[in-house]
Image (tube, rainbow, N blue to C red; front, side, top):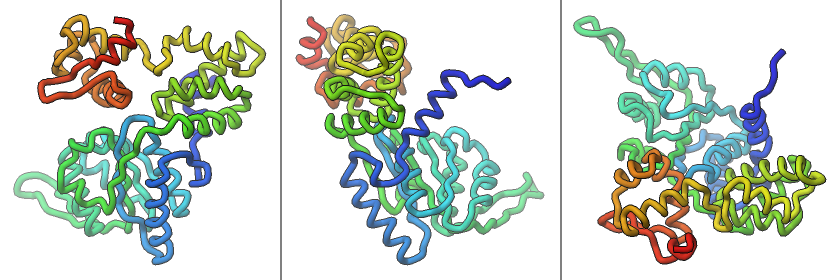
Length: 324
């Protein structure tokens, strides 16, 4: 008998919480307004959507926006991860199976293999793939015509995208951190879908610790719900949420142990900085990409960290927050 693992159940819950229409999508108002214009214009002209690129921190809603766009356009969408596109055959099989007007969403597109990215140049511009068949003297080229598709790319590291690739997108959008008020609305919407009651002050406390990121807000909400189920009556109160935050190691600014380790290493081992990213990663045992993509953006956003030409520096506010 097939038994769902907790990880699989979490994935299914995350999918159920994902908005499907603009009315359900909270925040990023300017981005939504611009996308509505692009989508409505494409539908009125009966054309496929332009290629669009989205960048921003992890968990801000790039994948969700791609799903909303596909639903608003009324077309199919194929999803894949950038690292999975290693060979010409990978992208050829995906693109050739798309229907006219369909969307291909590529997450972490800065990690697509270089040879595949170069194939995408003609695919995005002329809707053709130029493949080389065979090797040596027997090699020959083959031109494969493609349906008029739309490529939606998402990345946390836009600076790593080759310029010719980046320039082929019709529009580039940056997703920003959410306001506390928007995160509160997201929490209340998620709570209703999860069929759990959340007191207003508890929802506010979760929002304040969510790092202004919907994915983290939903993750914390699910864990607090577990505490409400096992330690309380099933209702998320301020007391239950405080108990959950303490058990999970999340402080009032949303910092977890990994964040505090980075700041403590900068202060105790490097006298507050400046310190290079490689030295910081080595001294804490943390992956360099995790620091760059997950930890650092939020610490910069709330003013606990500064980036200088010589490296990272812990601010006065970081010392105060850590009680040093």
